[in-house]
Image (cartoon, rainbow, N blue to C red):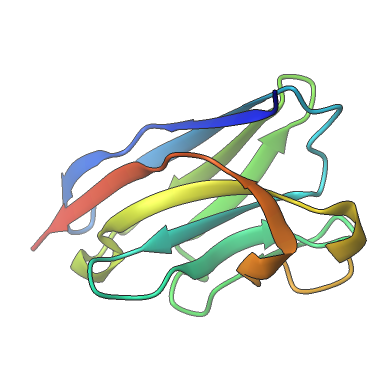
Length: 126
């Protein structure tokens, strides 16, 4: 059974850093099919970062220049390095695997993903 498990969340002060990990199991590979999303209380889930079908990366404007997505396909692990965190980054963060048929759409569109992790909480205090 395919599974995604996030880790690395926690509580930090504004300006701090966290590195999220997402371990994938039960998938043939994750190369260029993964993305990160987040959902804050009372808000809709939004795309944070993801890989395009061409192997590039795409970021939400709100995190551009501060967050970096990376992957280790051999270890089937996805990462999100988050620097200069702000209180508005506080949310539950989810990793997800995109359907192959959706690979040419924006990786920030959540309806293109079919497998989701349980999430890891990030809290940033001012």
